[in-house]
Amino acid sequence: MADTLISDPQPPELMFTVTRALEEALFQHFICQKLEIAYAIHKPIPFFEDLRDKFFITERIYKESLEACQNLVPVSRAVHNILTQLERTFDLSFLMTLFSPIDLREYPNLMTVLRSFKRGNEVP
Image: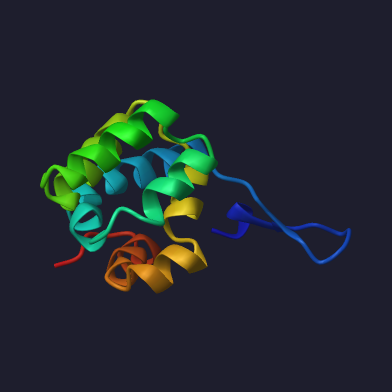
């Protein structure tokens, strides 16, 4: 694990080097945690806005997802649909967005999912 975290000699920033194997493991764990993530997101805002603003979803998907929630589609179903779409273009920066301080504050149940990523295994 020592080779996954490299300290940058310039100002106090850390750079992460992620191996392909680690990236694949995180992707597989994301797939396994999709349902838990979907149920942890209990309201569409700010989650949908954050995904739109950081270009993970298009304006069209943002509006369609909000409209679905307004038409009584459960938020968890709308979130799960978005997460399924994000599987196709999965990027580690999505996990940084998902576990941002704002989302962790707005959706406290995401903390359990975050802990599962830190442990590297599924939540029992």
